[in-house]
Image (tube, rainbow, N blue to C red):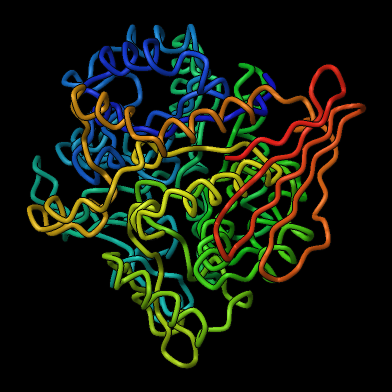
Length: 489
């Protein structure tokens, strides 16, 4: 398939009405002509943690969300995107539970990375571990095998518990490859059109390297899985949070990538009233990207923007965000902090709140996003101009819950009455329908306190103008009769 150059929605299976069936009703009633680009449904599978990102299997839907029939129903009207956590699977999965019972006698044993697959005698060497990009103090966990009381140690990149809840898969194993083939075949049967490869940067474990985005091995794996997807007419979106240059390597090889730089650049533009950095960025970035402002995590800062931002300026911007209610996710490892100690990984907030609940600033932010080349995604909280959910943060102790509010049907109805939401929906429709967005993009010369962007395809031309002093935005475009129209956003 070809990804549609139109706006997509990102939502949890239960965050717009409580389950997939209700989500389909909400989409059909309110957004049938809005999200023509599709719907990214964050993991709807049975999971043992991390709000869906520790899946037990991809062959089933979590019963409290619904069933595959509900995904197929949504897929009849919208292109569906789902995640595949290619690096790991839940410790509660039938595969790992069988391994825990029988150890090496388990038919699933080869799915996992026992340490003897890396070190001949199975004993970790500290000098090898020191080279690795770690997400927890040690990248492995020890488990007792129930049948004989022996101990097995397996690779676990992620996980907040010890032993970890997320068990790495051995992507070199034929068994793992077959598992992925089965998962993709099931996606195809259930009308999934796009698969996001979550945590794909960690799949290669190779001694003497960082074990993150190991070249050229990572490309061999991506080319293999892209071949599987292509046979089934499924598009892939690799997800890699790293220095932007790593993302650009994927873009050079023809893969879709995420624009993790744009959310910060737009924030900086609107808060500092200067478009200098944004305009420079828009002239130099790869075009084949998915764009977003907000998501279930936060606005990326480090390591994505290392080398692109002045940490003194970044500190000031972060302070403004914190004053407006944001909380921060920090870099853990010393070697990945900036020389001056700057350690902000992500700014966690609702994008509407971080712009001080200023309707014009928020619409300006979305206008820049929609004019930036790529496939625009709108997160459900952003769609409904949701505010920071401080109560959920207090209740759960999880900073990311600030932007993960679960909306009841009544709350959705109320949110849709807001003028800013109506303005946003109108802007989404324009982005979906106006043909110039399939043409040539240009960053026009402008004063530092303005943004001027344009698209042209044959006789269709549109130009965005934003006055950063007032946050007023206007699109000038030619209509079907060739007449110039001024659309005040």
